Amino acid sequence: MIYLIRHGETEFNVARRFQGGLDSPLTTRGAAQARAMGKALRDLIDPQNVALFSSPRGRALQTAGYIAEEAGIASAPIIDDGLAEISLGSWDGKTGAEVDRETNGGWSKLASNSWHFQTPDGERYEGFEARLAAALQRVADHTAAVRVVVSHGVASRVLRKLHASLPQEEAFNLTVPQGVIYRLDPGAIVEIDCTAAIV
Image (tube, rainbow, N blue to C red; front, side, top):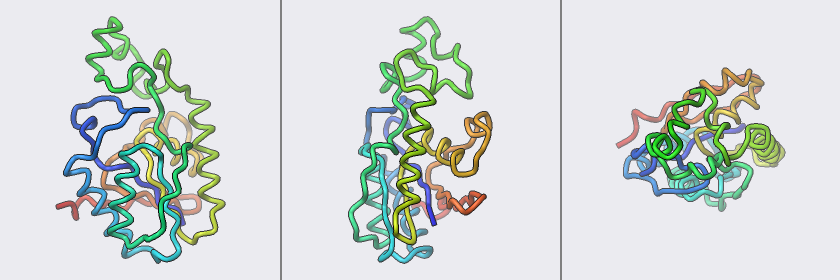
């Protein structure tokens, strides 16, 4: 059983800044989202037989820490570089408006359903998908009965695409809410909404 989680809300999320390869800390709400997801997992898993995987980014590791604390997972997270968010290169840390000012509307001119993969010096889709596919295989090959994966918004879309063999266009349009767990069942994805428990 694999559970896929996006990190909690961050300061960059609130400011609508592209995080990519950069980082910003969880907000108070982001920490509450992570705790709510941990509490939900506590009722779904045996914490003694769980492998907790995380992107190396601080926001994912911070989320994984709260989840482990609430779910009773004692083992340290397995940090997998392949689960990191896509980097937008020189656009990381900027807002769309800032990019537009610096590039004569470069951000607004990109296709809305695939702009993540069209930045001038950012990561390209093919390489991004390949490293996520390899990471997902490492997760799937782990011997723990339950594997919990903490990753990112765009990465979550592609991981769900890979799991369910979705068309690329459909995957690009998947929602990426925070405070929601995705259970990757054979041939299906089940959404577990934890937002009602956020305090």
